[in-house]
Length: 115
Length: 229
Image (cartoon, rainbow over all chains, first blue to last red; front, side, top):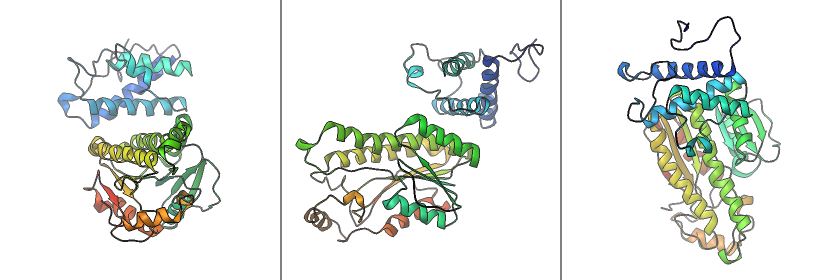
C-alpha cells in the first residue's frame, strides 16, 4: 500500500527500507524543494512514473539541472558521501537516466551501489 | 563565507589574509599546507583539478557551514616559453589547473550557492589575453577560456542570482612572474595605459566591488587593470 506522504511508492512498513527506497525518498525530497519554486501547473507529482523532460515532460533544462543537483545533495546527506549524478556515463546513455523520477532513482542507486 | 583557491602564496595568500581579516569565514586551498593561521581561516590541501578531492572539500563546507557566499578562483599557473619550445606536459598542466580547476570550482560552488539563491564568483583572467603576449600562448589561451567560461556561466547562473565576473590583473611582483625577464615586463608595462606593476590592493579593490551586495546587477564582466582592454 502506498504511503500517504509519497503516493505511488510501495514501501511496506514491515520491511527495512532498501537502498533504492532511500534514494527514491531523496529524489522525492528534491522534488518537494523544486516544486516550492515552481508555479502550481508546473509542479511534479511524486511518482516514479513522472516524466521529467521530453515531449511529455514538464521541466525545462534549468529546472531539470536544479532537480539533479538537489537530488545529488539529498543523496549525499543520506549516505554521507558525495555522489556525481551528472557524470559522463549519464550523459552518454542512449536513453537518458533523467527521463523519469523512477529512472533517475534507479540510476542513482546504481551509482551508490558501485561505490 | 568565502572560498579562495591557491592561498598558499602570492595573491591568494594576500586574499586569504585580507578577507579573513575583514571577518569573512574563509576557506582556502592549495597543493601544499598554508602557514597562515587565523580563527577565520581553514585550509585544505588539494589539487584544484582533482575532482573527488574537490567534491569532498565542498561536501565538508556544506556540512560545516551550510552555505557559500563567495568563490574567488585565484589558483593558476603560468609558463613563459616560445610555443616551439613548450612541452605538451606543460600545456596539460596549465590547462588542468587554470581551466579545469576553475570550471570545477565554479560548478561545485554554484551547487551550494543555488540553495541560497545568491552568490558571487570571481574568476582570474590576465592582461596577457587581450595583449596577446608572445611567449605566453598557453597561459593566455587558458585565460581566454576563463573569459568565455565567466561570460557564459554568468548567463547560466543568473537565474539563481549568482554573479560571475573576472578580474584581469597586470603583472604583480609574485612568483608567477619570477622567471619573466625584466625587459619583457618593461615591454608589457609600456602597453598598459597606466605603466606600473599592479599591487595586491588593486586586485582586492576590484573584488570588493564585485562582491558587494549592490553589485547584484553586474555579471559576465572581465575587468582588466592598468587600462588594458
